Image 1: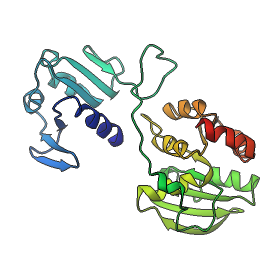
Image 2 (image 1 turned 135 degrees about the horizontal axis):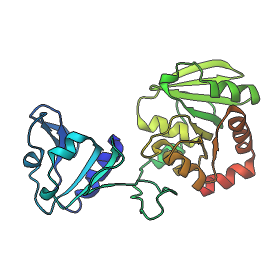
Image 3 (image 1 turned 60 degrees about the vertical axis):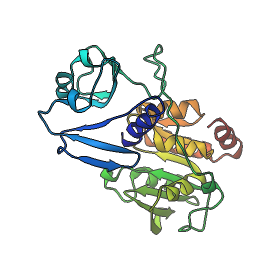
Image 4 (image 1 turned 90 degrees about the vertical axis):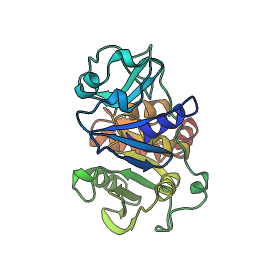
Length: 270
């Protein structure tokens, strides 16, 4: 959400004046990179704090009832939201799509730009002396070490290195045994791991945009994601990657991506 909100604010700043408002925050200004975030305590007048005019456009990350009631539709020209507590948002609020959705063919996606550092493809991560591994981006809440997906793949590909990233730490596994751990201290550390992997498996992609999936694809690394992953499913399908619904499908997809010709095809498509 933070990546998307900053992207939208940055794009909007090329067109006019942008005010970033944080409802429920103390009444103060907080520096946040390019923008200063204005806090608006609960119960304050949102429209007045934002200096809305009839020509204003409002973008909300999560449209909740307090926002709907706190902003009069007569105060601004158009309102958009990324997510909503109630899917039937009243006019003038409209959903912003970041990725193409087959269920909404008439809505053009924004397609925000996702930057990566091309130098990450030249140098592998300094913590590991090997490349060509299976990279798994895990959900820290799963709790298993390694996650079940790494166990399945390790059993099917005992000679293959597996790198699991979770909660700012990368763990290297081979033949279901831990080889070592290194910290992921910067985004470039993660990009290096992505760029030198055979395939990237994202077990918990974002619900607005599969950010890490797009980053991996920019390095020519194919992606595999769970079948019901929303935007990440669209990324995988558009790039000749794979989705899976059970461990058998995950292992089969990983084995397929280890074929040089198939991987090269998916890398070019990505």
